[in-house]
Length: 470
Image (cartoon, rainbow, N blue to C red; front, top):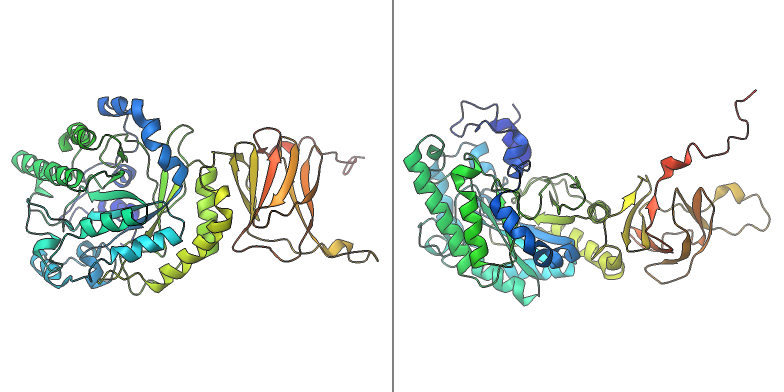
């Protein structure tokens, strides 16, 4: 069995076959474990919150792009956030990390400033990961930042830093807890379950009480209990009583306000909000040997893919033990932010679209405006080089565009683009041979209706000119 996979989803699938481990699978499906029972039907709590959902989530639908921060004791080991479980570290030995976890003051200011430069609109920080260490000043355990190595409230520093940069504030909270004595025992011991559930609710109450207005509560892994055993209805009721404008995800077993596909882009059904969370390399927490960094082109394309499906993109950084951001993360995010400075209109506040695939481009839309994200620029048209009057130019053709195009322009410069259109395709001509922008050039096409691209619909309509007909 391969135990080095760093995604929660793959690891939890492995848990299902690992009966000999101290943390055995709960009998739920792997998907339910990783997504917080995404198949759960709406509960009474969900239905009550549906009345205010549109108002509470309006900012989130506009934002599209957020920063995830995985930071904890595991950063001291530097082998990603599942190190305690993967390496079978005994709890007393792992607890020594808490004494040696001594981040520099206000490292979160650098995170927030980077998020702003990257064009991200909100931040979600791990207040408590599976290792059970609390980053805030809790009265419920000594296993927390103010009473261990840091000597101060790291959640407070995060909240203050995000607010200083005008960013929305989100708290990640892992229900699963490898450190608490009842964290696994609660599965089979009712007294332990009651103790652990009250401990969990108490920690969440502190987070919802001590830091002013919080915008997102991002639950994670509900192993080993069912929503009923977690008393998730009561949990969410408490959260909304304390934070009426908050939005919550679906990983405490209830439907919540939005779904959370992980390490893949998978749009929810139309009308359901969703957010893909993804790493910049292959690890969530700091992993000094993980060099599988995504390129700015990949990040921009993923962001467009999320936007075209009506979803958000929550992109992770894993700070080092002192809170510093790996330089590779900075380089990639700054490149993405520079691109968004001139192309953000094609991402922020866009609408879900109905578009066929394209190997060379991606699409987003806002109302009747189609944004063509050309990430592989076509260059010149060699077929015309033999003509004496030939002037090098690039041509882009989009098959299957349904409404009529009214105008087209380069988003970066505002330069108008010539085009022709027939029943089969839109043809953009006179484009420069070199791509005007990197890592993708965006062309805005105004249409006389909602842009829909269905190139497969062309197939039965193409004239075949009697090819193959005797």
